[in-house]
Image (cartoon, rainbow, N blue to C red; front, side, top):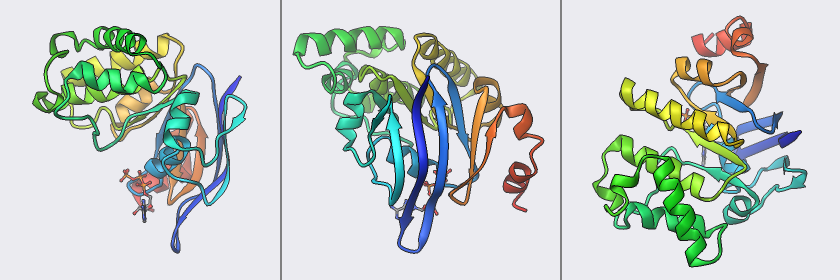
Length: 236
Ligand SMILES: Nc1ncnc2c1ncn2[C@@H]1O[C@H](COP(=O)(O)OP(=O)(O)OP(=O)(O)O)[C@@H](O)[C@H]1O
């Protein structure tokens, strides 16, 4: 079943088409890699799916509903979770408070939000940091918290924006295993990532953007043989 459908989506900033007439579908239960050179429009597309930006044209459907132009909290309540390239955790709040706040979006009572936060905290190996202010965490742990915050909104679709960048090889391996664990729970994932080896191993399906246009959808094996993809990455 198609969970997410992006249909002819365009976003213009003045004269610049950051995303230009992009269409693709994401089947439920899959991991899709959204890749492309710097400035290709990946973050802008994520923002439109998550409701942070309204498309200039086109339609975004989620679980059969037209969610085009919905507000971020409406998209989150419908089941679209996301992380941000620039981390937006609340520094003065503890890890558990950050997670409880996120869980509140979907779980209305204090007790149920807290229970979800505690479960996610344990699942993401943040238990030993639960009562520490988020500002005191190191970069890799903060990134884990950002992912945990998205998970605490109980998403059906999780949009991950460069959650692996800047991590050491050990931290990368841990993060990959966490993403696989999330996927095994049945959560559909779309991830933006520059570390190509990671994309190739995690994502059986790729969507490639270049200058706002969709230039490829298909397997990583086919992507590395595709002339348009090669040209985009070699700057041809
Ligand atoms: N709010 C904005 N106002 C004007 N231009 C913008 C805005 N947001 C993005 N752009 C432009 O739109 C284009 C696409 O940007 P976007 O950040 O979506 O690309 P990206 O693929 O995520 O890049 P990166 O890999 O560098 O994060 C770029 O040319 C960028 O400068």
